[in-house]
Amino acid sequence: MPEVSIKEHTFWELEVCNACRYCEGYCAVFPALERRRRFSPADVVYLANLCHDCRACFYACMYAPPHEFGVNIPKALAEVREQTYAQYALPRVVSDLARRNAWLLVIATIVSLALFGLVAVLSPTGIFATHTGPGAFYAVIPYLVMLLPALLVSLYAIWVMLAGAFGFARDIGGQHLVAASWRQILAAAGEALGLRYLRGGTGGGCYYPSERTSNSRLLFHMLVFYGFLSAFAATIVAGVMQDIMDILPPYPLLSAPVVLGSLGGVGIIVGATGMLVLKWRSDRAPADGRSLNLDWLFLLSLDVVALTGMLLLALRETPAMGVLLVVHLATVLALYVSAPYGKFAHFLYRYAALVQNQMEAAAPARQSH
Ligand code: SF4
Image 1 (spheres, rainbow, N blue to C red):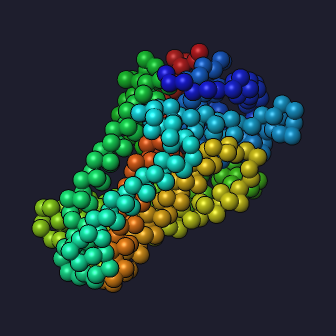
Image 2 (cartoon, protein in one colour; image 1 turned 45 degrees about the vertical axis):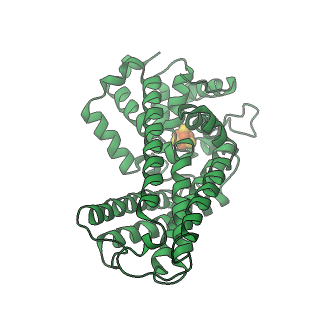
Image 3 (cartoon, helix red, strand yellow; image 1 turned 90 degrees about the vertical axis):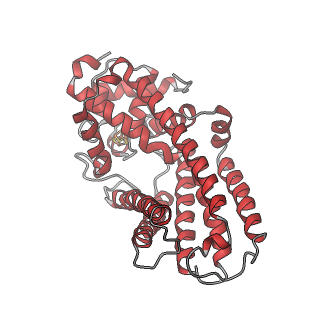
């Protein structure tokens, strides 16, 4: 297991929770906690990724700050969760760079801007010419220059994220990893796709951004998640239309790639902006600073990608198309480069934790330590 540094106080806080059991209806964390008598580092990493930071337990706990015990489960688990992304994603040199706040994203954006900007400026018509009709984008950036870096970087990101998630699943599940049934895998997928735990257990919503329950986080997260899936589907459909049906972009406003891409873009802009506002207004007491930074970066970069994509759609027949295309491609590439090391990767770790939770719930006696 990679080196995840866990404070002694975190182990102690979990043991206090296990003795109290007041919060057991809030989420999947407390039933999982109760299946254990002692906590190994792998257990804490697992519980951290099962936690979705609803903060119900913080506001319910009589030992939460300012009490001298200082039991702050959302903060303690967020600290561990943030390390999961850095420790499980290799290579270490990139992972370390990513942990230094925004540096990986900034460097990737600058390099991508320089690459695509240079190609666009050196194109036969320059970056500020107006292009319309089939193949208009490729007059500014040739197809292969657009495709190859995106393909290589996305394959790299997928490999790093999957390798990290499998390593994580092996560590938290131990010898029981192979025991997951299709039923458990699908049940966990249903929980993830429906964002079940963001609905709040007996709490009835997340205690976010403040001490009162609200479903706004669930709504904005849904918009980001399904907006991203819609934008991804738009890319696949566009690829099929271009490479199999020989129909070059830009596509009409009512075509499948543009409709899916627009729905996705608007969903991401509304969802990511809404989540940024919620974060801005959120109570900092149950928050971990480093995790919060990752959230800011991820939501901001998603917002920029979606905004530049929508602007590109709106202004694609004007002289601004070249510049917008360069900026959009550069921000997409930077997002892919930084994806395995930040908040983007959380869905894989969370999903692995949900599968583990399904297995444990089906056989609680086997999992007790
Ligand atoms: S913050 Fe919410 S999800 Fe996390 S342990 Fe507390 S109640 Fe469970």
